[in-house]
Image (cartoon, rainbow, N blue to C red; front, side, top):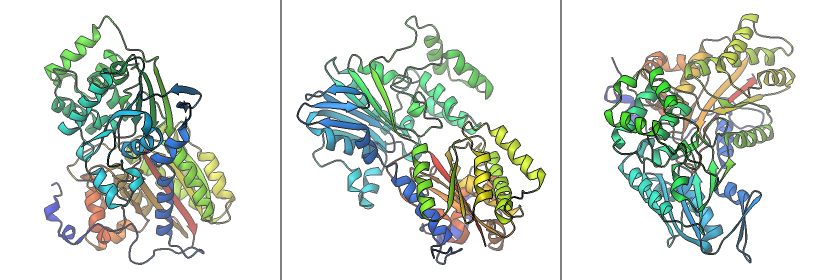
Length: 523
């Protein structure tokens, strides 16, 4: 039987609260609670990848000559600059771009999440807001990270602007995570609802971001290089805030300024793999058949410069600096954590057990069995940049608390109708794992948070857990396994301790995937 919100009276008395509970859990020598340090580290990490500073680092303008430099390329500005953008961080990016380049900006159109301007105003983040007489038109849409009619109107306005450009113009494209949902423009006769239904079915069956974007691009007017094609013959400069593992520009926001390398056969292979080809609407079959017979072949994007200005790797580098400033031995495990959330949670549980044993008795290991299981699971996850050996060596040589850092984007296979997001689901699963493992005299805390401040269709960025979570929840009548079976992690955390273990930041104005922190400290 599925859990429904009305059946949980705790929600009526569980207002949204900050990360920290009323009393500290664990205190370090500095006097700062471990949970408080986790929140501080998360906020510092997000602060390092805010759009304004990153954009200013990427661009430089000579006011006298009007020469714009982007990396090693130069562009002459003379009131010939146009701007479009789409994504969760684009409002702040556009504000910074207009501040720097406003005298040359003719017109702009951006598509941003519904409610983000009001949220930034409430948070007092004036630097994320456009000035009152801005030349940039703002569309808000994609409520709860889902494409909608408002986002479609924005996408069509962006296409119209791009199609009107000439060879003398420069189009500045601002792209960040969430851009796919904010730039929906299905190729007729496919409707927005048909494309959205297909995407939901793929996601529910465990399709990863690369597979989802392959399908999106095949059915879109603007993705997969479509926007760049619409802007031709204008020069195009795309400034990209990456929310995808490995920072592949063709995948971020489904690559609107990058020629697609995929063909119809790739799409059919994905649809077959997830058992959906037979259920395709006639309109989707029509568009795929038309693309398969296109005599012009794929678009090229030789008039485009794509530049990554921010990423999860940059965020983790800042997290490492901040953790070390707090007195931790810190090491970055990976910026490419992906795979099924159950396997990722088990990896972190095993890692806590193996690392905890080394911290307790330097030079020793957990049982050979756990050590082998950890390495086998790491191999199964196929994380290309995993620094497991280095991390364990750091733990073995530590003479104080340790913080293991990682980032990425695990996948949740939906099997229930609950409410949650991948960060809360991961945290709850890690909490359950920690509770089942002997950790000795080591205090452990795990935090998972989305740098955009919104984890799925919830108002939380993520959550943090400790090994005692499941047993403490049981005393409140909350069974962790039941909530997990319904993908109902947000409801669990709202109920448990009045929401005290939820991570609340509000919309941050940026998005470089998720970050995971594993704190270990001898009692």
